[in-house]
Amino acid sequence: MSSKKSVNSIGNTIKVALGLCVVCSIVISSTAVMLRPMQQANMLLDRNKNILVAAGIFDTSVHTNADVEEMFAQFTPRMVDLTNGSYLSDERMAELGIDPATYDEQRAKNDPQYSRNLTGNEDVASIRRRVNYATVFVIEAEDGSGYETVVIPVSGYGLWGIMYGYLALEGDGDTVRGIGFYDHQETPGLGGEINNPRWLQQWPGKEIYDDQNEVAFRVVQGGGDGPHEIDGLSGATLTARGVENTIQFWLGDLGFGPYIENEVRG
Ligand SMILES: Cc1cc2nc3c(=O)[nH]c(=O)nc-3n(C[C@H](O)[C@H](O)[C@H](O)COP(=O)(O)O)c2cc1C
Image (tube, rainbow, N blue to C red):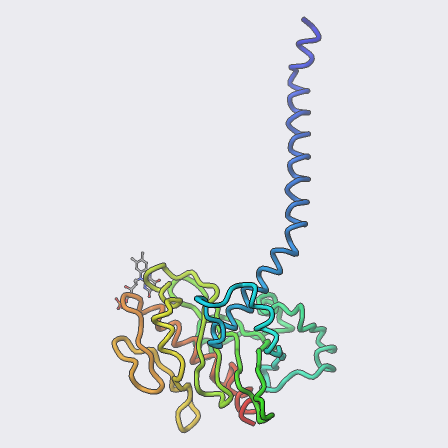
């Protein structure tokens, strides 16, 4: 009677529960640690696939994830200093402690050493802060005369949150090859249509800048015929405006405008 009581005692129950908690937490944390490299590899694969899709190289009806690594090898990543529109030299990267292989733009955006605040008028895309250094992906022209493709990261507020994507331009730094959004919080069927291939197919061939080199690109509800225009999203004017603001900001003076002038066309 007394031994049965001791086995079922509150103390034993607590000990078993605590033991189970410890075992479960060890299993969960070891699994998380073991899966981390796989998770990072998948994130990189996804990012690279998005860059290829934006550049119009990856056709989802033909290519698979297994093709991404080989196809992506034609791109060279380069670090751009957005404060002056030039590429960062190796020495400057060493000074700044930037390793392009591990540079994390999301983290840099919250670090005052690597980013700056945007004031009201400057913050066209409603992103609050802008990184000072950004990674672009380029394919050099075969005849050595500049670039065939330049892919830049873009981000801007839609209706519900910041939309992240890549915009691919031809070597003239003006004509669009394509765009792809890899992360957003817009409503499926409304703002979420920014990833609808039918909407995205309007982008290739459109021009960002006018003859005065001002950003002339617009998203026009019910429009889209002009060289600088694409049609908006029906029932999602606010997201469409967010996309326009995103392009206005990132191709403008505080975005990649000076880089395009100096390094792409220059
Ligand atoms: C539940 C809900 C979700 C919505 N999601 C979006 C959205 O993702 N993007 C957007 O621009 N508008 C969205 N809207 C609609 C906006 O509130 C607004 O009416 C719309 O952007 C106006 O576009 P229109 O002039 O083309 O109708 C949503 C509305 C509701 C009720």
